Length: 132
Image (cartoon, rainbow, N blue to C red; front, side, top):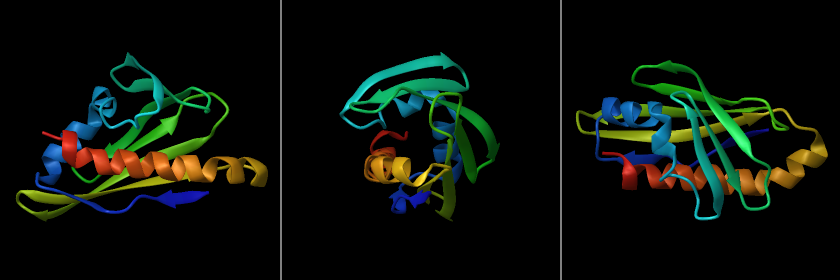
């Protein structure tokens, strides 16, 4: 399953956005309102839970400064990656798009497609509000 958020414009340089997203504690304010749990595990890993979904642990896997950051599910029942692609538009403006890639059976895919689409869209829309 491959899902993409809308591209979001941010009045910040790609480097500032990249620095913001590589610090996993900054994902807390990006989370949807129905987040029931958010916990930092270490400098590269955090756990979160959305209402009606199992707890998910995300860990930084790779990054390409200042354009890409990939987080992957660390254990648990869901196998997926979440990649933030940052494109520089000008010195003080960039665009971000989140991409979700997961391997699920058809039944699981049908169950999680809508909540995951909403989740990555919320994360993307919250980046301009909290990135500084």
